[in-house]
Amino acid sequence: STRPLYGRVAVITGASSGIGEASAEHLAMLGAKVAVLARRADRLEELAARIGKDGGTALAVAVDVTDAAAVQAAADLVEAQLGAADLLLNNAGVMLPAPVEELRADQWQRQIDLNISGLMNAIGAFTPQLVRAAQERGVADLINTSSSAAHNLYPTFAVYAGTKAFVTHLSKHLRMELGPKKVRVCAIEPGIVGTELQDHVTDAGANAWLEGSKDTVDWLLSDDIAQIVGFIASRPLRVNLPQVFIMPTAQT
Ligand code: NDP
Image 1: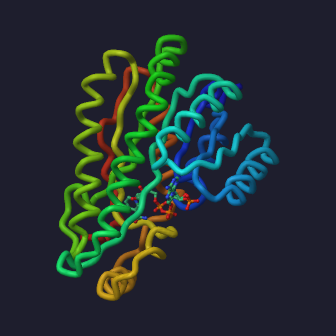
Image 2 (image 1 turned 30 degrees about the vertical axis):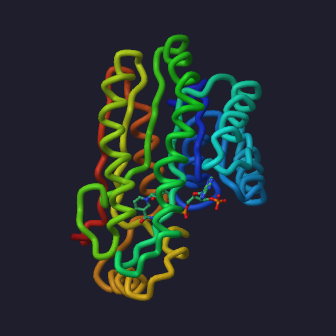
Image 3 (image 1 turned 120 degrees about the horizontal axis):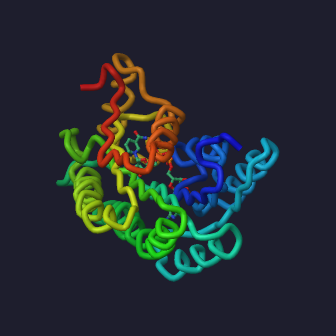
């Protein structure tokens, strides 16, 4: 096959909607076998069936990535069914902006549990496979979904932005550790993308700000990010994109 990702095994967390779902479809189209992880089993099964119908190979694994033991079990299942993962798109995340004085400690914790601890659980469970695959196949990719919020200031986004600054900075350090082992580490940092991410926002002010931005900004589409992920993973082995910052043209 001439497809650029033929022979590769990609794991995508947060694959039941948005950026993860679009990326799973695109990586499969580029020839990778994909394992799709998230909590909603029905959505994952539909996605896997769609990929299968298009001639690809997809394994649906329902898992809550905040549960470290469950993520390890998922990693073992992926390796047994598809072989060692050589691409992890570490993408599951939640965004719950609200003024800090509202003291939504529950929402702070959800963002920290998923965007930081959930991300680390997947890194812990899949890094051994990435390193082994890099040794055997010569290359592997660890792609963490950060956000433009790691750099930019958005009103009432302090905790979310803090979790994404963690992802970006962590990725730089892991690149230093894993690059010599031929694991390419990348943080993708999108501006606003129209997905289900916005549906979970409960704060009225944050919702008004997000909605209002639609008047002037043509939001990115999930597939725009999927194309970037495919590009990153299909570069020649010597090429690593440590950070990819991608914005809607009119978003400031
Ligand atoms: P979505 O809400 O569409 O996707 C989030 C995904 O994460 C879903 O598949 C969801 O599936 C999954 N998820 C949520 N909680 C868990 C959990 N506990 N365990 C496993 N999976 C979980 O949003 P996006 O596609 O936009 O978000 C993907 C990533 O992109 C996030 O990290 C987000 O922060 C980041 N991002 C998004 C931007 C945007 O504007 N949309 C901009 C910059 C970054 P399920 O509920 O089935 O578990």
